[in-house]
Image (tube, rainbow, N blue to C red; front, side):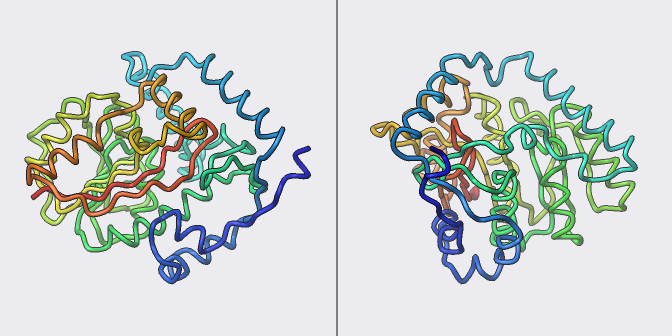
Length: 316
């Protein structure tokens, strides 16, 4: 029975292990956000775990979505257009910009620290990401004058960047117009130092130059283009931002000799999420073209895969 499963609590040490840092840093940056949520979760084991794995296998087998398919552009256009219309019809309330996938995955089992868990917090993935994002922004974004949120979507991360860094210029780039319109609408309404532009990472416009002392950030963006990321890397190497921070699912970090990771890798592969990005960065590092500063899998994700690994790197 689910109610008989072992109970655990998310704590500062677990966050530190997940983020790849020390407890004192997590305590300083994240403690307040952590204890604003319900930290208790149950860990699947025994028969309940076996039943969940069968459910996962059935979900993978029945899944038909292909990431990067041409028709997906219309899906993103319509999705962000829905958020844009909600924004305008609700007097520019920023809560209307939460991505729809965050609403879909409430009250669901998740992957966490090598286990399947059932959180008591109904929107655990969203809340955990908010804590992680607070730490990530504080840790790596503070020293730059301009930040480029590439694949900014509904401006969910961009809004947080403008709150945390009101004196920095924040750019929101995306390949569909409603996303760009969201950035420019909220910038005008709230008088934010932000600007939206059309930008396609599969075919970057090299006439778009970066500000001095800038950082490029992607979150769940590169994952969407399959293996069509080479031109974006070339763009970065040419424009030479001071730092790049990618928050993406990384196929090569799954240990496919264990069932837990094998299933996630199988889903990742079947959907067509990006593969080869990390090996390509490692090749470029061997060639002396970039430096990889930090790589960390958070060991956290939805039931079927983990979308949260950060890579911090810079062109040389």
